[in-house]
Length: 378
Image 1 (cartoon, helix red, strand yellow):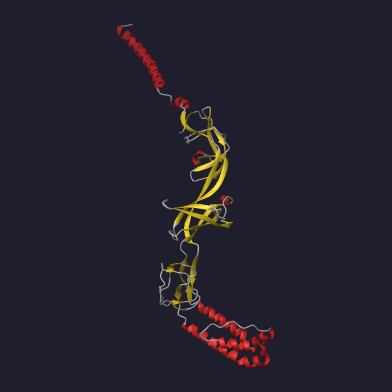
Image 2 (cartoon, helix red, strand yellow):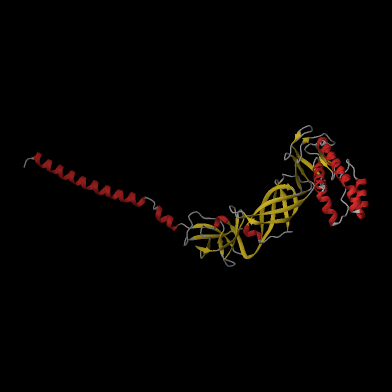
């Protein structure tokens, strides 16, 4: 074998050895790289979360029921006309905000035409009575003097006086002559004449005036709204489960919307019906204060239920199955509780013994059996 052939064979052997060495080195380096990569899964399994706990202390908890509403005048009259005519100008003028003392004339409608009709009806009645006087003198002489006195008091300018006492026989006689029907028709007309004026039934304020002097008023037309000031009613809606724990006459604390003013109220009425949609009951609170006005928005705090052997927790700590996390031997466990009452932020529950460590702040991803490190919450 010549020299060139030996050199080629030697080169092949060297290249083969080098290839094997490169492969071995590559395998060793990849192993080192794999071993040097951090193992996140094993570390997360061994991590322990720190949680805050609170100790359960069962006690009697006095609850309050929050509610709110708008004040409405307790005594309120909607003025509606029952007659027709032109609204007249009087003093004081018929204007919103005007104050009227009890018995003061609030408005007056022109009654000239109707008053003339009443006078004519009185005159006709007087003629009818005069026509039966001779019969009364002959057939009912014992009662004639009473009717003669009745006629002497009668005036077409004044309301018809009351009928004198009469026997049954005389009553049948004058009824047949049409006297009784004429008398009661006249009384009805005189009653309608009173509807042309309205006097304040109590001291109050006209809060709404829909008519002005000179306006033509028709029957059934609303004139305005008249209220008594200083005495108001607040209507609130309460869940039906709370109604059994309140009663008429109970005191209620009221606050203004900004919380700067406080008032005292009394439960005046409790509706017997339950709203089918909201399952709530309407409760009326009576408030007496001269500084208040109709339409003011107030918040109310009603005394609610006194619950024995219970404690309060944040609503966010309860799961959908009404369970709470407790900590035993640094392990989370779920505990079933009985929810007795909800407020806006808390729930009052029962079912856990005193001294048990309760999770105080929700933990993301918490599960039963989770290992934790507990710290009491101050």
